[in-house]
Image: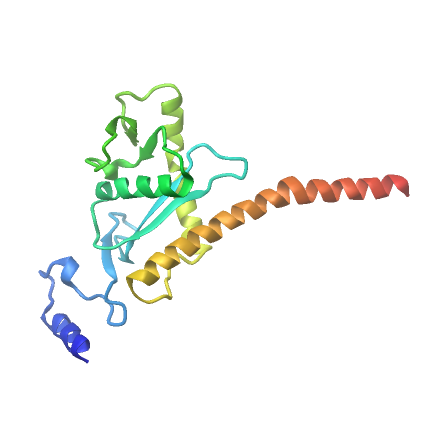
Length: 203
């Protein structure tokens, strides 16, 4: 009861000039934050930021989500890069050779700044690096699929822990789908075709 009264007091006192981090946007989910997107179609989103890392060069099964983190507190994008790379190393056991990010990561907190390349960067971008930097946008459709096909855009779990669990489960669902698609296209259908034509020739 005391927590509810304190929350109600915050709702009554907040106004347009109140700091965004101190506002209550949802009574039943006070952890919800307002995220400015800067796009004409949708200027703001409500929820929490999510960091997604994927492989720029497609594996045999395509592109996979190597790290997915729900981040609260509306941090600057550049301040999330270090934790995203550390989580990727932990999950894969591989130290990335090059990292490609968008312009929002200007002034990031990762120590090895020479291996981080930003969209629109000209200095030090040539050859293979230039080709891979063009493929940086491959993460955008992955984010769209995870949000709309794997329900990351609407979390039904409670609290900040629920946001983190929902993010990880959505990423796992996307990776499983990639694996199943690979099995279907490279194992199931070739085997089915082989059996079909074998039986057809015997008839």
